[in-house]
Length: 284
Image 1 (tube, helix red, strand yellow):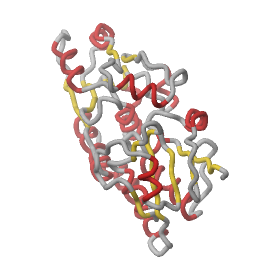
Image 2 (cartoon, one colour):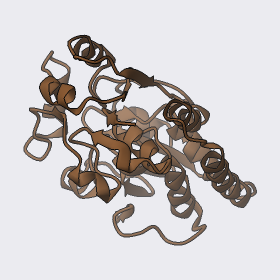
Image 3 (cartoon, rainbow, N blue to C red):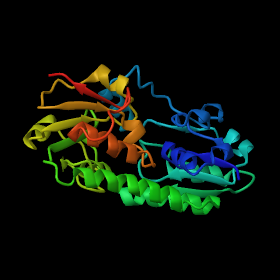
């Protein structure tokens, strides 16, 4: 089985299913686990996130500029049996339309599987979908992930629940929707400014203030914490944290479960302290 993943979350799923050795192509953003570093990269981007501000990146993305490129010649040479992609967000990964156009030009037609989860259950269902497609029984892995979720939920059930606002882009301000409100609720918080499964829209900081959060979580899409720390908003809230968005919150893969565990510690001090890089509490 030869697999090309055009979605970082799909690469996470392939790893969770123990199939990394079958991965023959990946995106330039697939950075976990470490073994993928030697896998050929079939995508590219003309946007330098380190050189541009959040506002400049947003303006580039929403003014018709091509965010991702696909090396169709390399894709054809890799001769994948299965291509894992998505049709949920053109900003998060190369679009399903672009992948379909590339596949039509290939010598051999691989199976294209589009993953489009918007809730936590759907994220876990993707493991079964991918496992079934690749001929792997995912039952034990899904059960183990659900047990970790249930464990956190039991620990936080009787805790006083802080009001929590999660931000997945800094300028313009963009609330974290989809599965993130569920992550917050399971971890013992009251999610604000976004609903479960919601594909959100930009808001302003006043809207965040009006929601009266006790805790604000900064988890910009595609930004590791060290990048977020270079562009902190000039806003004051009772408590603010910078989290590793790409690892645990932006991508609909199995590591969202680790994101719940991190949040349980952030909100209630439950479980071991997050590793360096997983969460930073900002001083007032």
